[in-house]
Amino acid sequence: MEDHVVGVVGAGFMGSGIAETVARAGMRVVLYEPEQAPLDRSARRIAESTGRAVERGKLSEADAQALRDRIAATTDFDALAEADVVIEAVVEDPTVKGEVFQQLDARLPDARFLATNTSSIPIAQVASWTQRPERVLGLHFFSPVPVMKLVEIVVALDTAPEVVEHAERFAAAIGKHAVRTKDRSGFIVNMLLVPYLMAGVRMYEEGFASREDIDEAMRLGAGHPMGPLTLCDFIGLDVLYAVCDSLYEEFKRPEYAPPPLLKRMVVAGHHGRKTGRGFYEYPDGA
Image (cartoon, rainbow, N blue to C red; front, side, top):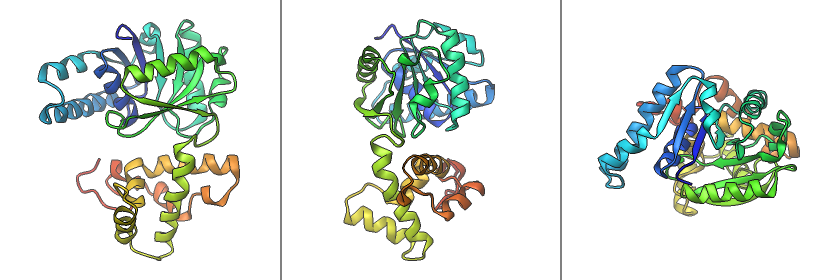
């Protein structure tokens, strides 16, 4: 698959990580954003990430430069037309995603598949904006993408079997372990993870224990690499709130409902590491 051209729509934290991962596998990437500023931030982010890989001996300077050279950043949507596959990684808003897929479907009639990196929005809802829903599926990556090995392949009602198989080959080619899941809100990981994280938020909200003690208890007592509140900050409280909303809307179960504290933090702009403040403070920002 080295000759593949992969389109990535959205140059935020996840989109940048996807672009870096794909380019590291030897494929060319067209990274699209309608404005230049996010592309500039993405270039800095990828340069920092590959720089760390060089420092740790995981990449040579030449390989890191070649990786970056394989990523073509653009504000021209039509530049995506050369892509064999496209992965969308924009804001968790079904209307925004739907409009992106409507344009992709019209302008890339020969693309093998169009994938969304959504963490909770139904794939069928996104696919409904297209004329070819059989080639739409979910590719849910985990943060940080260059490090985390898992990708969930989310199979919608109309996704063609050959499209799923191609997505599995693609995931393997970029060094990821793929698992299949049906098109239900939260998929596998978030459906299991979110109730645990929200229990931690409620425990803190009710004053049951300090944030540090909650996190240390799960880190040292359950062997988790980080506690639930630290993990919330790492994921992004705005992202978690959107996932909770989607899960609760679909299943109407109280364990998926976002606690009031989470909503207050999100509207106040305290989104975790990326904004410099969440359940903890991060003086250096993201």
